[in-house]
Image (cartoon, rainbow, N blue to C red; front, top):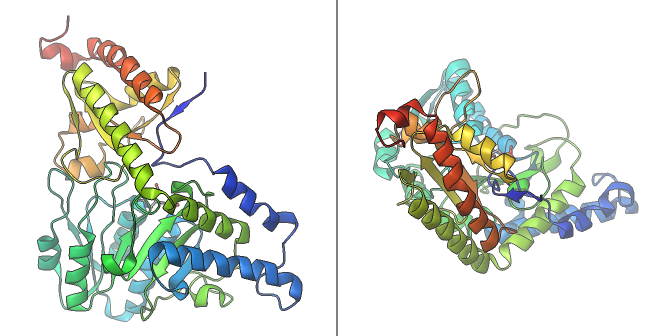
Length: 392
Ligand SMILES: Cc1ncc(COP(=O)(O)O)c(C=O)c1O
């Protein structure tokens, strides 16, 4: 039984064309890009090509691209790197309550260990940050605003352009975590009005452990890693040449034909949502009314545990994940769904489907076909459901 993979927000398979582009940079073209001899010209040029390609995809200067070890590292460099420049003065950071932990925990670190003030702005029931609340939160000592472009759990796209205008008007640096949007929707850093933007290759069919940070020229960051002058002193360490080439190749492929793929994924997602809502009573789509990245849907199966749905789907060869980041010992509902005001037991019954490049209508139909029996079986065992008097 081959797996029906519907967890593309977690990671994607590396495209074979990407692997092919990376291969020469292991055993064949292995020169250190910083070395002076001609053998290293190949790797140096490969990095230049990658920088130009990524810059082209984001509509910026190659000089603005810093290669990193992934999305989490890009977020950390952006947030801590800005804060560290103002360490003596402390400062204030504004973020949202629905950020990925790479941003949330970094902001909490600034607050708990470095004495920064942090304002966590809420979202409406659709998962959208209100730019007016960001504006209200701005203070003379605000060091940074960081609000994500698209949410990883519900796929909701945030009003980054408006927040960018507010930040620009006040001269406050603005970072966005675009790990879930780059490669799925067009991202133009100038149009978004951001100073810093994080992306990660493994979310768009590139390799894991490599990412990039856009740093608008004029913005200065303190490095987190000290050493050589790689990446203009912002990220010391010999470059992951194969990974960087893989990232650029993957982005080039994702961006070419992005509109057609968006259409395809939107229609597949609609088919999945429509099938689930039609066939299974007491279901809803978290963030369903908002503008979302194509391919992501977060479905609440009321009166069941999302974890149990995931396990049952897994037995049927379907890979999806919960909207709630629970562990067995700690059944905390997802911080994203809680911030959206989703009731705890509904949040705990939520499942994220992340559709991607290889999913087909047949796969969607198969999932729609097997889900009703799974949910019905779990509901029969649910005391919560029995109490509704709806069980047979
Ligand atoms: C929104 C968002 N930000 C950051 C990350 C972290 O990226 P990476 O896995 O490359 O460290 C993820 C990964 O799930 C994400 O979805």
